[in-house]
Image (cartoon, rainbow over all chains, first blue to last red; front, side, top):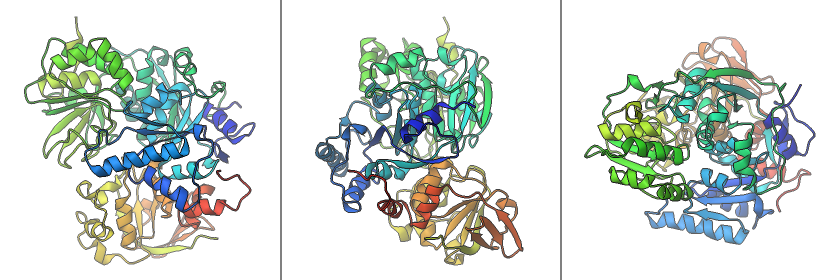
Length: 420
Length: 175
């Protein structure tokens, strides 16, 4: 029997000829990635020194730090945290990437999404590096292990394979595909597994759409998602790759825990209803629900195709008076390109509030809602209180639907705005 | 080192599938840092007498995919403060699982538990035989053995103790 891409990557990282799902191994991450956040990086730095007597990490080129939350700082304590991170980076010779965008996206731009590589982060949305055939796992506080040990102990995960077939209709986006996967398979379907996504539909998806899907793997219970990199993915990743690795691919006779075929041809825009990422419904069933806030951004969405389609919806129109539309491109590179294309001009002219890249709108640090307010959002999550008051609500929709809803002040199917 | 047997009463049964543990303290309290205050607000919306009723060593029972959502640490910090010694659930969500195992807080995946326990039944976790015994009812259920690293982590009282124990092994530490 053959091997999955995840098994092949972990075998190499463990220095073994092969590994199978279920085996417990010690594997060496090619990349150890984190953003600075209270309780994570500051604690890791402290434990490294105080508990383990380690002044500097070995092989600093394996490490990367991002400052993307609490940007810009609004309290001296936040700026202290950032300064501590910068100082640690200098002392350890580890790069600290700041104000370049959301780290999970910038990591791909900077080549940490090397096809065939094994990466760890504390945050599970790093799974989006799987777009390029990188196995990237979020391990929460266990990340300390990768800072103080060369190898981390891990059980080789099983893989569930999802084959996406068909073509998306206009106005239906990659976000809708992911939420449809959750609706079809269930929020516990891939617990502790790798979600491997393939099928004939993938080649028609942009890199950006693939990143959106892989970013959200955790809401199926998976510990990460991965795609076997095709020419499109390799063209993006190989020239940026930071280390010299041969891409690997699942064998045709690889062993899977389950295989699912999902046709996306008839898919319609979806809304994920608060307060759970498992509450996936058809948008049409919630059309008309009044909303006061729109958020277009996050590590899942907020890329060029999201900004372009929002601009298309909003071009020549106006955001409803009183509606707050926050547009936050996923990275500065994306923002610059959107600016060059005139996409930002269209969004601004329509009344959008466009800001530089930051994670802060997604987790309720900026642009917060008060009691009773409702948002349409392309953020990662819709749990209670995520974007402000525990009595506010988040309806997750695709970027086009955020834009259309901003015009009408209620949850709106974007497709009529995309005709003609 | 071996894991101590857990023995205590089922202090609460969370029947919800995909239970979001943040609900234990309530989202509005999730940023509270003071452990005593967290313990005071825990379960207030479900059972105002919860803190008074719990004894050290008591256990929580969960349904499928316990810990789904975006779990934070304060709810179980509060539960440990109240004396809760572990969680037995049908199954766990990976993010929650990793977080609590790193804290050295026992989590036991035990298919069938939800239909085989009543509130305040006395339960015992036998680590060696991978069994959960319901002493009140005289029944027992097999639980899924933990991955080695997770078991070692619980034995060592959490992530840091576990990493210290690995210092003595032949592997290369950094630097």
